[in-house]
Image (cartoon, rainbow, N blue to C red; front, side, top):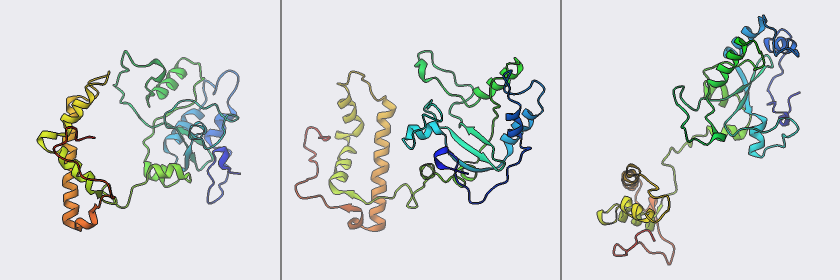
Amino acid sequence: MYQEQLNLTSLDAPLQLQLDASWIQFHLGISRHGLYPRSSPVVRQLLQDMRRSPTISADYSQDEKALLGACDCTQIVKPSGVHLKLVLRFSDFGKAMFKPMRQQRHEETPADFFYFIDFQRHNAEIAAFHLDRILDFRRVPPTVGRLVNVTKEILEVTKNEILQSVFFVSPGGVLAGAGIKKKTLSHLQLLAQGDYRLSDVMRESLLEDELSPVLTEPHLLALDRRLQIILQTVKGCVEAHGEQSVIASDPAGESAPDSGRANPTS
């Protein structure tokens, strides 16, 4: 039976176990000499099924659940790695570990990169499987590339609420909010002025840091551009909904920043 604690997402309807499924035939061929016989025709079919079979459920792997604190999986699998891994289940009861692409094929690891957090390339394990088979070791599990429709093959079939939340899109759009405080708006308007430009204030404030420059010049200039976008958005909301609906009054005791103050970020 399906059990959540065993990483087997419950299904709405029972499925029939197919004894001739490629993954079952593959497991029957495992021996002390290798994961599969040298001339096994099952491997080709298994790769094809992993590449084409429709998914009926998707869930975090056990080590992902351990990292999320969702279960004590130490008796099942030792948690390893910090990159996203999902378990996809197929209609023939087969399961496959899914690792999304993170780096481009041509991207090289920097020479001074921390050795214990090396790139986890999506094509590395595929190449490792083929090299292992060519060298006749037959120790690497079958691995194949697959183009995944994230909406249809993961979001629409997962029962895991945490995984579903990853794909949540607010119906209010990216501009959804409860308004802006009058003091905050005045502060932003002050930092948009030439004498108190946000990039200049940030540049001066960061000078004392031992890792200076913390932000490069393009990053600092981006702050000014984004500040203008925020102010234009607020202006548009005020024009569309009225100042009373957009700008909240300041609590008693708070006051707007004074342009004569020496430090507008205080």
